[in-house]
Image 1 (tube, rainbow, N blue to C red):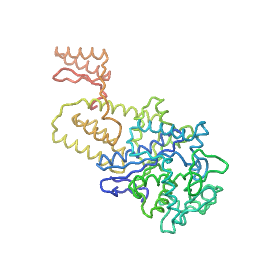
Image 2: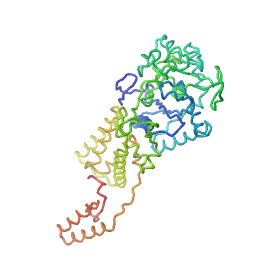
Image 3: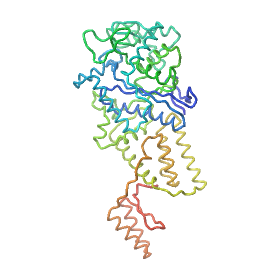
Image 4: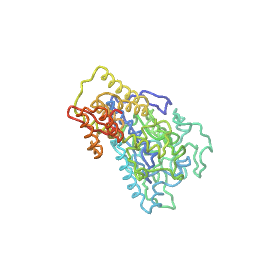
Length: 478
C-alpha cells in the first residue's frame, strides 16, 4: 500500500518495522462534550487504514487514546498550555464531577463508534490510567537536561533538544516560529515553541483531577499522554500515527520531540497520516457557528450512521469534504440502493460457470478495486469500481463474493444485511397474472404492454422455467 506521509511530504510504500505486523495509533477524542461529524471523519480514516492493512493480510496492533485530562482550552487559539482544562470546564458547565463528564462522553463516543462499524482497537487507552507512565516519560526527559521549571509547570526545552542534533517541527513550520509568534501569555517560556510536560495545580484552586509527582501536585500536559501510551503498547518506535490535520502543527510535532528526546531513537513513528477537515455548506465547521453537527443530529433527521459512513467514503481523506444535508441525502439514497441490491445477491445460491470473458471481468474488477485502495486510500475511485461491478453483467453470485470481500474495507456491513421479503402490491400481482394469461393465449403485444405497466410501477417480471418471478426494478443490473 502506498500512502502520503506527512513527515516526508510524499506518497510512500508503507513497510512495517516488524515483518508482517503494523503498529497503528490514532489520536482519539477529548471526552468533555459530544463529538462532531468532523471528528468522526478522522476516526473513519483510522478505521480504513486498519481495515485495509488487515485485508492485505497484515497483523495490526491498533491503539486509540481517550483524553480525559490535560487538554486545555488554549488549544483553540494556538497555545495548548493556556486556558482551562476541558474536563474541568465541562464539569462546571453541567454541574457534574470531571470524572462523571469523562465517563458520560466516553460512553457516548463508544456507542457512536459501534454504530459507525469501526474496528475496535486492541485497547482504548485513557490518559488518567497512565499517569505513572507519563511521569516516568517526563523524568527521562528531565534527566537528559531537556526540560525546565517555569511558573506553572515543567516545560520541554526545544532549543536544548535541537542542540542534540534533532530537528523540531518537521511535520509543520514550527521550526520557523520566532518570539511573539504565538499567543502572548504570562508563562515565561525560554522559547515560544516550548510546551508543558507537567502542569502544577493552581495554589488558589482545588482541581478535581490532580496527582502527586516529583515536581509537586498537578496534572500532565496534553501532549505527553500520546507518547507515553503509544510507546507503552507499541514500542519506542512504531509504524503509523493517524490524526486530523489540526494536530499537524503543534500536538504531533511535540509528540515527536518529547518521544525522541526520552528514548534517543528516531524516527519515533515512520508514517504520519492526517485527514483533512470536514466543511459545512462550503465553510468552516464550528460550535460557535451552530453547524458542528453530531451523530444525534444525523439520526434525528432520519439518516442512519451508515449513511454518514458512506458519505465519508465519497471523498479523499486528504481533501476537504463538504457536508450538506442534500449531499447526505444523496449518500443515503445510494447507500439504500446498494444495501437493497446486496440483499438480493445474498439469496443467490446457484453457481454459474463463468465464460472466459466474464472471468476476466471479475478479475479486472478485483484488481481495479485493490489498486484504488492501495493508491493512497483512493476511496472515491474504489466506490466507482464497486458501482461498475454492480451494474455489470457478471453473475450475481460473483457480485456477492466481490462485495463481501470489498466490504472488509468499506465497513458498510453489507455482508450482514438480511434479505427482506419482497412485498408486491396487489395491483402489481393482478397485472402479473393478467400478463401470464395473455402469454398463454399467445397475445404477445398485449402481454408486452402489461409488462411495461408493471415496470412503470417499479417492478420487473422475469420469465423462468418455474414461471414468472417479480423483482423491484432498482434491484438488479439496471
